[in-house]
Image (cartoon, rainbow, N blue to C red; front, side):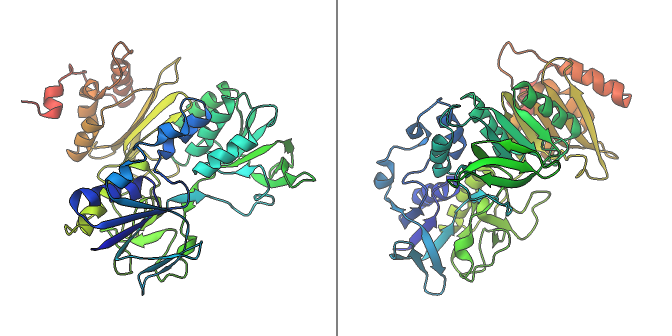
Length: 449
């Protein structure tokens, strides 16, 4: 019986295992050093915030794995021998495989800051990070101030978590505006305001120089690179992005870049070895998509696709149109297609931006200057139907069409305020158009008979 071994029990590895089991009776083993059972990584913050217990983050009962004949090994893979098809674990045991799936995810970035390995300095990615945060910042008596380094999604999640326990937070963001490498300026500036309104000490254009220890080897303060200012703190959160967790593969003969290099079929250069999820690096471009995408849904899609290949139906990975969602404190964010920041904007890319005069609600739509074809949309505080925008992007609809039919895309709950009329009015004023908003017609959108 063919033995499929999967290293990593995150969304990618577990999805692959589940779908291989649906399609075959192959022997399946999942190895993970992080946790015994699969859990939802995106829910970790809610455990710290008291909204759920850790066991609530586990989608499957503990008996699920035995029932589905999926063997779980709790351990760390130290070395991979692709010639002998053999894995060596840190506890000196070994394991043979016929096909190997690398799904080891990511780890927090470190950039060689002095003091980055002190007690009280940590990232926020793994179950162990959550447990460490409970030790380092159980309350505002033990942790009188935290400093967060890095202005991405993980950084703002950590800031929100700490504020729920009334821990003062200083947030160091190297850029001149929050996440302005991704967000257009109007959106980035709105999030700056929102962060400060939540009593977070946001320091823009500020970077870390050094993390200073006390006499016991714990963090006592940080020093800022630009001014030399020292900020006393008991916790430093390193949230300046993540990098693929692949150090154990360096002598394996598997081709590595920033991640494990794979083709469109998620195959590595080594026979019968594959990589999926955060650790996989596409060495052939897929449209505008990044070679490495540390996103939950792409990991799931890779797992489903690879299961087909392993079970005899060789299938290329096709993620479709880019989309994502997140929360900036209490503001919901959605993106479909591509809306680039000013620094990364394409030459032909035009932006239309509308912001509510009083509330933290805005929308940015990107379209092609010449053809006026829709390129992408960002919304903050407005929910959109994924299926609608996925269809419009595939059909290469014009910006005028999108404006006319904007109500069809709205997915806000009943009795929420709608802003389509104001949005279309500003679009007409900005671009000299006379678009009229059409009535809602989901039969047309979803092709309902």
